[in-house]
Image 1 (cartoon, rainbow, N blue to C red):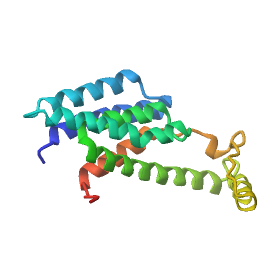
Image 2 (image 1 turned 90 degrees about the vertical axis):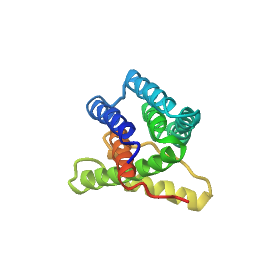
Image 3 (image 1 turned 120 degrees about the horizontal axis):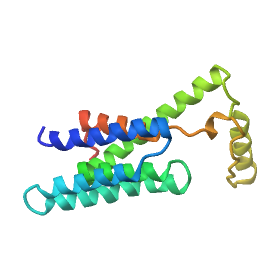
Length: 179
């Protein structure tokens, strides 16, 4: 594996970000900035200009994939910036694939979180709210969004950096082709 050093440094950044996000529910900008700068620097040291360009494009792709989630309020700004920093290590295709794997990991974590909370009655179920949103869409043809109730599981934040770390690590291990 020719990029093992890059991957190990990226995993270290992801590990620190995940732990920080898990306990603080935020990711420090300094950590993300240091990670992105390190990725750009290390990729820039590769022969030719292709390394720096790959890191730059990876940054843009990682940010672009997570930006809609941030703008819609599904993820935090730190998550989008973290995925951009990851992109500097993986390049554009790697950033895209790792971002998709991270979204999948985050979806699985969220479903597990929801099931655990509802099955063990630790929170209010969001099903009535989802039913009303679906009914409104079917009857009027217009989607609406109803905010979660106080204490509802879907109103709670979970540390998405953990999903990014799991998805990116999975991508590094398997590296499937999407083409």
